[in-house]
Image (cartoon, rainbow, N blue to C red):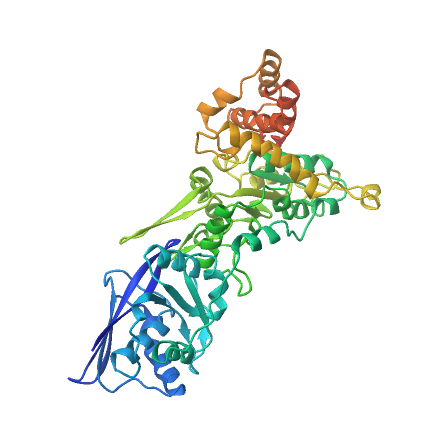
Length: 511
């Protein structure tokens, strides 16, 4: 008897329906699994055999042929255990499952018949709805994630016995429902850190506000213990809240990577990723034999924080150059190509010298040669993609011991939101969401300077020895500063402040 069961495979951040054809033939004995399965799927026969035996069923001693179509697409992981097991039981007439074609069935089996959670549930559920399936049956731990998708019946099960009884005896399964919008709006402002906890550092806080308002990449330069990491961790609390569309995009990526907790359904706050400096280039941008999203994709719609940036391998930093520009990463293999979104805000930190102190600090013991070698770890093209360089000075005792709280993230965020609203209206007919993304054409159209401002930026380029690449960055940042003040035109004091945010372009650093 031939039976067709439906599962799903993940390709990038999208899903593709897989037809699992199970044929049980009396002419011989054997178990044949075809359709480019990986080792985890090939090993499923052992898990299925033990699981079925422990719930009162068995794999029949006949010739069983299982084809996973399309046969030329590689299938990965253990998520097909449940669908193959139900297919074998149905094809061997051990159970009746007349309506099995209406469901996507996925789940990893334990030897006792219980189900383990799987990856990529959200894109699987979205694809199931688009293809007109009535519902999806999957492990209970994944049910809340799948329930984000409306117009689809989601059934979370703990044991294969429940699925057997559902098809064979018509026993009802508990349907999982979720009010996505309610849950999203309830948790949208949950942040573990707040800017009011940061003592002093008013200049750095202002730079962070400007960076958040324009979506600018920023690097913090300061001695150990000056608060660089503390400031970076609080950036998500002043960024605009995720829209429902952005939340779904972000959740899909984390779902594919298996980073969604069992109690979480929809990501409600912007991700903050902080990889260790020993990370490989593949782990950062994504890839591998069976491509997975990297840290830059997990930071999509959020913040990627590179602490002590010069300690990262140069090759790792250089692979970020194209994703920073294109806001997506393409992983190419001989047989296929995968695209992962990677629109993130880069926040980096570094010490000003190998000894950890500024060149003019009495504690600095680094020679000019050591300083130059240290700075050369960061290439010009990479720094070209970082709009704001800000020096973070050591916090004095008087500031640390002050009882007065600083400005709350909530208040800073309100100003950021106003500036982003101005940008949304300005670029509503363009595929641009913030000032950081504008190109030469938009700079020419929206960053016009009056005579005083033009003279100021010209003087800065000459006197401070600023590089040519700094020119566009200064204009972009000045445009954001003007938006924060709700000023239609860029004025001289906007240019003046923007110039202060180009520390690494000065002769003091680049020698």
